[in-house]
Amino acid sequence: MSHGQPIVRLHRLTKAFNGLTVLDGISLDVFAGQTTVIIGPSGCGKSVLLKHIVGLLRPDSGKVFFHDAEVSAMAERKLAEVRRRMGFLFQGGALFDSMTVRENITFPMEEHGLGDRSSRRAKCREVLSLVGLEGYEKRLPEELSGGQKKRVALARAIVLRPELILYDEPTTGLDPVRADLINELIIKLQSVLGTTAVVVTHDMSSARKVADRILMLHEGRFLADTTADGLAGIDNEVVRRFVEGRAGKDELEQLHREAVGGSARETLQ
Picture 1 (cartoon, one colour):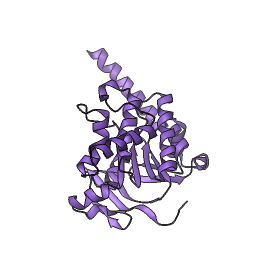
Picture 2 (cartoon, helix red, strand yellow; picture 1 turned 90 degrees about the vertical axis):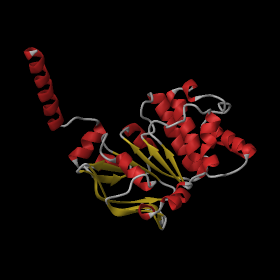
Picture 3 (cartoon, helix red, strand yellow; picture 1 turned 45 degrees about the vertical axis):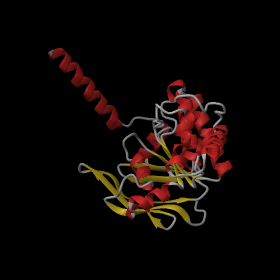
Picture 4 (cartoon, one colour; picture 1 turned 30 degrees about the horizontal axis):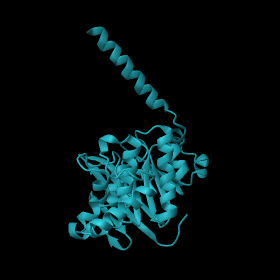
């Protein structure tokens, strides 16, 4: 599934928090022009992986490369230059509540000293058109629906025309129709802008729709590396249960113990 040289490389990446290992020596090559999707349960380290790519977190060991530049060893000043070539869609959108849509979208341009007022406004209109929100420039985030906020955040993520877009749970909190709209935008942006994408999600419908390649992260390691069609042929029981949305015996027994324990405590009270 490779296409030439990777745009991102993770080499034996390890990260722990308070003694709990979240990433356990994982390696990954992300190839240009592909949408690579990382699936896995909540709290398994998917967002931690993304934050290492963009340099928001440093590994305990291992290395992160963007092209030939080692992101994991960069000073903050150098990181700022690399981040201009990346777009990041945060899970909650992370819009500034006191800023209009236009101000939110043009903020990265102002931070990097790019363009004048006129060119920034033109760029804002261009990216709003790409996400289907023409005419929304003067609205505040409080005037937007959840799906519209995601699209504004996505417009901000692409305003600098990044080579790489990182999506952190892009469909979380959205109804199925709005979620599918975000999926369509991910596909559209790859086609129109020629970008490379890394998407982390536990939404299997989204993963199947947008992915060129799917990997499953579990307990700090990758258990699967395949395509959407190839998921059906995975024999690993943990992967199969996640893909099918089916609780395992251990989870069901734990749920039963917790329910019994709760009933006992209520009786004693």
